[in-house]
Image (tube, rainbow, N blue to C red; front, side, top):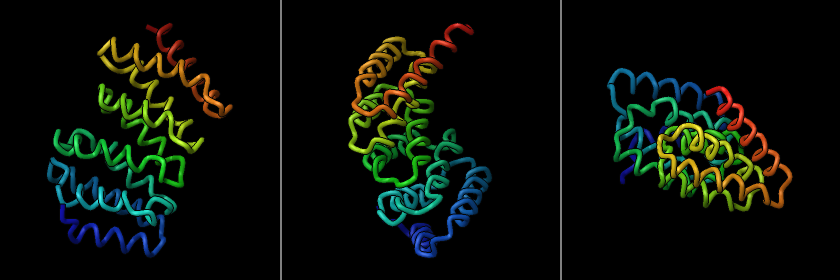
Length: 189
């Protein structure tokens, strides 16, 4: 895929190091998506390209551009969603800011909420970085609570239970909080 001028613009923003510019750019993307009614391919390709660049992954506010996919989910084509999934997985642990991992986990569990995204979450549950791993329960929780596929919900629940044995107290705490929210949600039904 050729990145094009939008990718070059994003690279300039990263080089400037102005995290507020990411917020402005996210707003501009959202406006363009709203006007066009679709997620433009040049924007999509540019975002995927910048996501894979280390300097962007370590930039303050990078999560604001990750959130663009969450905010404009309905306008992504099925092909774009299929293309996005492996990029989210392969770069998940690379982001310096925890919020990027939180948003990605949410996208996987709340928006995709299917077998392929569950499998991604299973793999991410074994990633090296503690903070990144501790945000995986958020995505699993959404699958348990939101998917119409009861078998998939059962598998996600079992993965949460498996994560209770993680060596990190931070991860175990996040698992416990997710499980508590699942129980509360079931009581409210």
